[in-house]
Length: 444
Image (cartoon, rainbow, N blue to C red; front, side, top):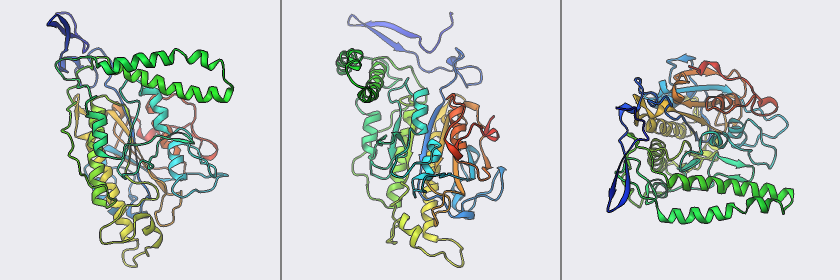
């Protein structure tokens, strides 16, 4: 028998019409280790981000020990099931240089762009969208963003200073976008091109044909605007092409059951946690189904408005107003909110770990950057900051270490992630946050 690959189809006719039925995702298509396709092409490596507000409570958050098997302080106790899957970086700094420290903004912006934002300025292109240019064009969605806050303004993803990457804020809307009527099940027995997509693709092609002539008739500023506009259209064109092509079978892809309406949309920690978990599971399955290879999740904004039932002050206000308990040595309610955030981080990582892929899990083939906006929650400083990296990025990352950034820029973690994802840059960031050094402790 001649050598097959995963593009092999069984062919026949139904009522005179040609039908191509894809073979299931067989072990035959993998190499002997289950880490690559038999053709030699590796399983795809994906990139994601996760963000929350208001850091932690000093030594209640930061482990005492460095290296593997690090201890889990009170605020990280929930990490036990995923500790060995996460590299924790602490004692980092978001250097402000000549810019002001813009509370709840500067810290995460430096972590995701390497640049301290000037007064009144927004972020430059964030790391996820830089990486999406590298790996995101082969899928239905170039990137995918969601927020558990029920507020579409809460995002840590930006195309540029004036253009946020708006997230899905409703679990039901996210489900319908990913797995509704437009979802193409890669494991379905047959495939038919959607006539609506064919029509839209035809109209879009006619519009795109006008790009070159239009560019010649406008000034420099308008050419920049049109370039951004047509870049978006080209992305849409690729998505149409993808939807008109029979997906390859993917064993790990299982269409979730449709969500019921009526999920709570308030800001209590229970409701936020529920929405977050549902969206995390949907996002992980979308990645497994190769609908996207770049994804973002917001648990809470920097000005976190999460509410604890029976306590009438939201998270952000609590960090300012709650006194330090003289016996405990920290703010108990502020710490409560941090612990709930960390539980949701665990839910997010676990969603990828729960999906089998090859001879491992989906988490083995992703890299997730977790960021926050400050170091110590009570003072809102941008030193003593923490950054997380979860997953093994296709075997290129050693996970499960606590690493001391020794006061260096948190941008070092972002630059390491960029290089691991194949973005070829000699350096990243500006001024004191500029770095050209990959953190060798995480390289496999």
